Length: 322
Image (tube, rainbow, N blue to C red; front, side, top):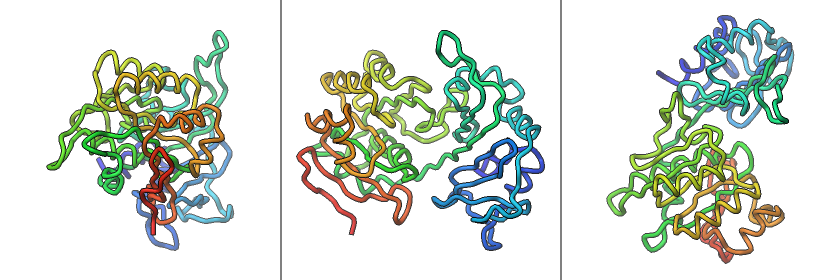
């Protein structure tokens, strides 16, 4: 099933017809460049296309103005939730309490509304009135440029990918995992363990990854990063562990354990440069103690996942975009 059909099937008829004919300057959009679709009850339909936010009109035109914008009805959102949950939303309670549901194709549907608490923890979300669909994008080969810097003397380096939001850090991480797992003519593949806390890397649907993470990759889906790293070490004997968006104090303890066990780590974090990371309490210590051997800095000036710079653990510039 193509990406467009995967997305359209979760929308009510009126919205389905609008989104099916999205266009800009009277030219149909490229769904591969569509990043987000946002819906709010009694609010305008918004999309993020090529890193820019647009209002959507009733005839599917993308506009920077909210004139003649398509507005979302409460019943439409309720109907949409039934499609998303295959008419059994209660079956997705574990995902809902984390604020998202992963649908076929690996696309992540973020939800918000009134939280239901139990013992001061979120048990469920009801009166869901806000939905954000983040389309899953897999760009095979986007890590070609960084793989030679990650592998040094036939060993995978501990690597941190630093990226502002919407610059493709997860897309890059996904392809790094795939290439390390599969190997190629010049190097053997390695066993990779992935802790996919928000179902964004492998985008598992009913337990099956929708993205290609390679033939030697094992995934813990919807698992907290710190717990998942330790679980993978105990159960799957990975050579490399990959995680997205580190930063919590418990992450540091788990990362230290992973590194001391001789397992290599590939991770991502939000930021624009190494100096940003140095200012963060937990990550700053990691940089100071040279836990990571490679730092990959991203930007979105030319395309998603564009490499700005690559540094080693001493701060030596190894690569800079021309």
